Image (cartoon, rainbow, N blue to C red; front, side, top):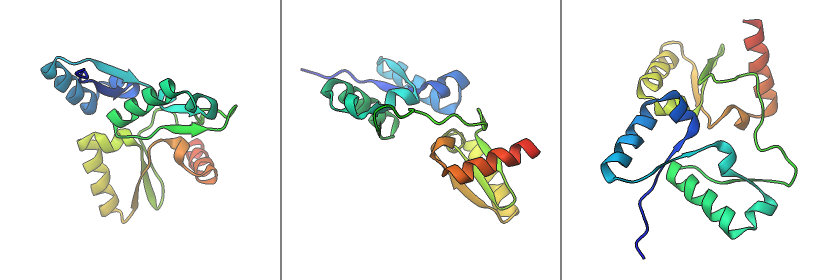
Length: 148
């Protein structure tokens, strides 16, 4: 049995119509393959869901297609951390520039932030999402944004 080629893209990338989405859409069109939109929730399973071979394999295939990993949470834990950082792809503080995965995928944004960090002697800290930051660091960032 020949397995059909599939391309995966984060729904947030597709909604923003950014460079990563356009690149994957062109590849899918050229290969006459489906382009599958995936949300962060599709990549997050509870322990009970992870025991289901079908659910785990689907999440693993989507994660592999995005170059990410499946996240397994304990039963009843929230799948995502809601933050006040919203849809920002980067935040500049006095000593650090935090940038999300979306900022690293957009070449112009990445190069601009890299140049800004070098010019201002700041640390450039890439993260997958704002929920990946330690809680104390995330709270400090949210507080600094409220003050600004």
